Image 1 (cartoon, helix red, strand yellow):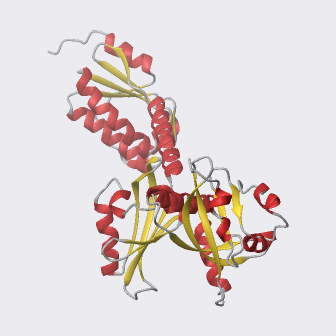
Image 2 (cartoon, rainbow, N blue to C red):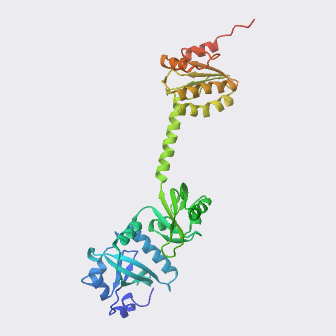
Image 3 (cartoon, rainbow, N blue to C red):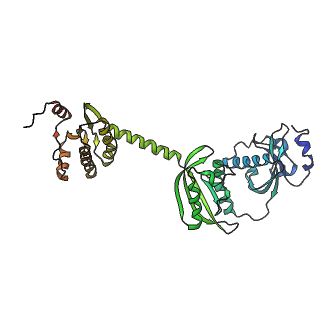
Amino acid sequence: MPETSLAERLRGVERLCLPVWVFDYERARMAFANRAALELWRSPSLDEFLARDYGDMSAATRTRNEGHLRRLTEDRSAYAEDNVTFYPRGEPLHLRCVLSAVELDDGRIALLIEGHLRTEAQDPTLLRNNEALRHVSAMVALLDPDGAVLVMNPAAQRAFGASSTPADWFEDEGVRARILRVAESNGVLREEVVALTNEGPRWHAVEARRTSDPASGRHAVVVHQVDVTERREREALIGAQQREILELSAPLLDVAAGVVAVPIVAALTEARCAELEQRLLPGVVERGAQVVVFDVTGATATNGAGLAELLRLISAVRLLGARPLVTGVRPALASQLVASGAELSGVPMMRSLRDALASLRAPRSPRR
């Protein structure tokens, strides 16, 4: 705790023409202001100024203040400079601010800010571009050809930390090298990768392209990242649901010793047959199945590719040493089989699954 109050320690700046104020970031309120600062902020009194609530600051402003406060708290003798636009009473005011750490009466650290009015002409387009970049949710960084960070927008600082480097950003260590190769090739890198953010691993759509550093004239790489985790998770969920639907539309049923039935429901598509193949062929081997009954009673009309996949699957069952049977062929599917010239010789066709099971239970006549 300080031995003297903040007001006593800053008594010497009261009469300065330079605006000086203290911002208590934790409470989002001002803790001190000299007369010049009250005029700059268009406040009629110190009490009114200290009563203002700045809790509605944007995420970008929070990131900026948190970064300054963290660095200045770590080194109490340091100071920082920042060009900031303030809006006293809604009017834009462009200042070069010099910030340092100051201890409040309760021992907490706040920002002591000196405001130097920028008298040079401001380009409205450049100001608006900078403001837009500060508030977008996309993470943007400019790198030199060696991978050093030249600048990061607040979204990137929130995601990775203001002192982080591209080597810290990605789960795949090769992403950094691929990004830096863009500076040499003048190509464009577009990938979706796992990023190691302060919130944990996230899927990011990364785009990197070569540009020029306006301060040095050297090549640089601008890296643009968008969080696509929700989309990836949604796609994964949809994929899992689709696989579950496909499995339910063609389950593997043990209907008798050594007999597996495969009731196929809905459209006989290429995707459904491909998914069925991944489950059926290993299942035939694991179960030691001798007979596989393809029941297509519930199957609707199909396209040529789906039909070809089914015929290929029947052939694969044969190669595994099991005997395929087909039941429940409806007129539309029968017409497609004939039109396709499908080779089904040696594959028994029966009206229903019941008929197939009955034929399997019936004793076979001894061969002569």
